[in-house]
Length: 78
Image 1 (cartoon, rainbow, N blue to C red):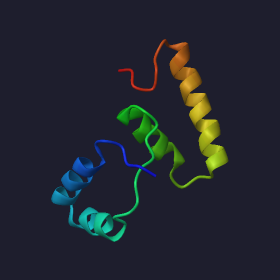
Image 2 (tube, rainbow, N blue to C red):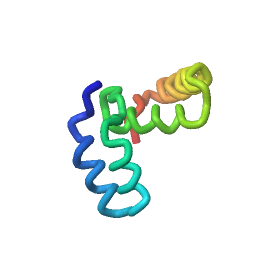
Image 3 (cartoon, one colour):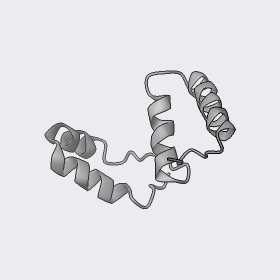
Image 4 (tube, rainbow, N blue to C red):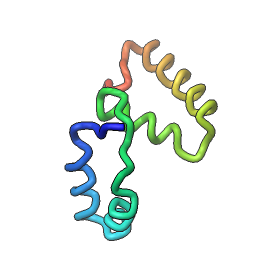
């Protein structure tokens, strides 16, 4: 799996700011976040998917995007 273009910079910045994150980044150096396009959408999907099943995450993601679409937004709207 290929990393998003911002992956190396993001890892370096996290590692420079937090010793625990630095250790985790080093320990799991081969792991990457699968990009879903825009960085904000990728982050939202990662947050939604944490600690719950993939099926539940997909359901929640569907509800979130439907709500955003009702308001004329995409995942990265402000």
